Image (cartoon, rainbow, N blue to C red; front, top):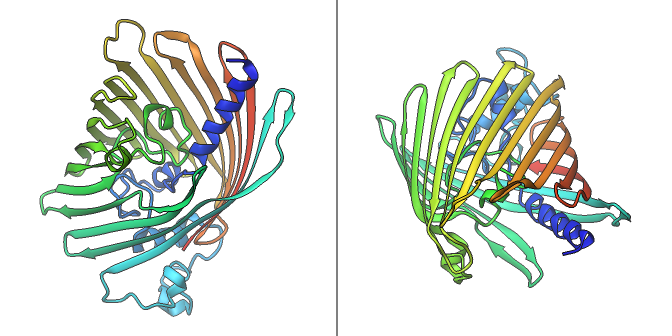
Amino acid sequence: MSARVAVLTRAAAIFLALAASARAEVHLALAHQYTRCTPCHYSPTGGGLLTPYGRMLSRQEISTLGRLASGVEPKQSGVREEAFLFGFLPREGLPIDAGFDLRPSQLRYYFPDGSSGKRDLWMRADGEVALRKGRWTAYGEMGRLTSSDGATFISREHWLSYAGKKGLGVRVGRFMPAFGIRNEDHSSYTRKALGFNQNDQIYGLELSDTSERQLVQFAVGGRAESLIEDDGGRAFTVASRSQWEVKDKHVLVMSGIVRSGSRNADASAIGGLAWGWAPRSHIVVWSELDALVTRGWKGTPQYTLATEASFEVYRGLWLKFAPQLATALYDVSGGQSRYALVAQFLPRTHWDLNLRYIRERDRIQDVAVGIVLMQCHFYM
């Protein structure tokens, strides 16, 4: 494969991953002393529809504008900005919650011998709904999927869960198995490179045990898209994740996943260790190291390492630096390296503006590609 073709292939792969990035802002949670996803999201693995509390936190603590004065209730302000459709539809007494997730974007590639033209596109346009009654939660989302074969609709997540009184929980349906730290950038080496891309959810069963400082999750199932279309990727999956709140704003995560072989891939196993830390309310750092081996493995594993340092320079304005490294299986000198520079601005509830620059280099051919991505994320 020529260097030019390799660069184009990597650029296309990055684009496809970025196109499905989900809303799961790890740095915002840790900055406000939340080590788990469920206070702000219906999904126990993060992302997707925000809970009423998550909407309130977005208005009061995360966005630049819209914060209510101390002691003032949303009803007294006259506008329930954080609510679905700004509170136009009454929710009191109703167990149902709904939302939209829209992400118009502009994308451009930079190659060693030139650049591509600007491309305007919708990276996400989903509807989300949750029904919570007592300890039961039913969740689903539906969106438009565009591919080379045309456009269709897809539901990437739909599941039913039950939360027991003593911290035991169960979930069944289609969902992404818990592994490591769920960064919102699915093109991260610790996400896409390990098989956690936009269509890598499983149809399966998840069990969980929650205590004051520990969360344990265990899931079994098969890759959802392969079960639907038999694309050669059918593989039985077993995943586990243990998370400890070592102390305030310090989180340790250990993960493991085993996939059986399929027509397209050998059986594989991945082990991971992650650490999240927020030394100040406006500084958050997280790192994750994973190692992958395959059936018949006798050499060096594939290592993936990602770190993201986030700094809030002004309320609602974050700057991020994210260096990453991925080695090749059996060859630690191969693979890719990359870094991302990100500016994220959350001016008001429901709005999230992102400017991201990614520089990725093939470590063997020493060929690099740059990507500039601008997004206006609107979640209602």
